[in-house]
Length: 169
Image (tube, rainbow, N blue to C red; front, side, top):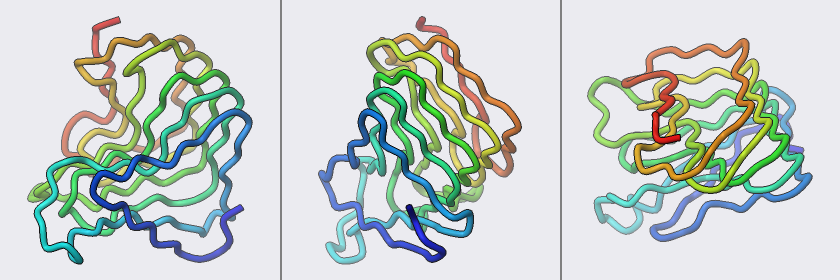
């Protein structure tokens, strides 16, 4: 459980997202936050390859009760990548991409359906702000998603669509 504080997570160039698998719960106290940063300032290199925080693949995963915020808009990022999942719950999470109309790099809240089959995904009482896309299925998606429920969520100040349900499947 994430306590009542802010945690800085530095995502290095080429670093894979943190894998989250079967029956793992990532929960916060409501005022906990993860601040996603990159190693760009330390390396001095412009970053073009996106960074990801969590890669969710498995059954019975729960993510709830905290804020995930990008430190700044220097590095393209994806906060949650949903792989092949069953009975996934994301609730009471704030996705803050720190983006504005002049942002130099994208930040997406959740990407899903890229490959494989996922089912029973519930996203509820979340807030998506300052992102390029709040929820996104990429055009290259080759997967399928069944029983995707999005309820009581707030989308504000996002640069593109809040929810992008692409048509490949």
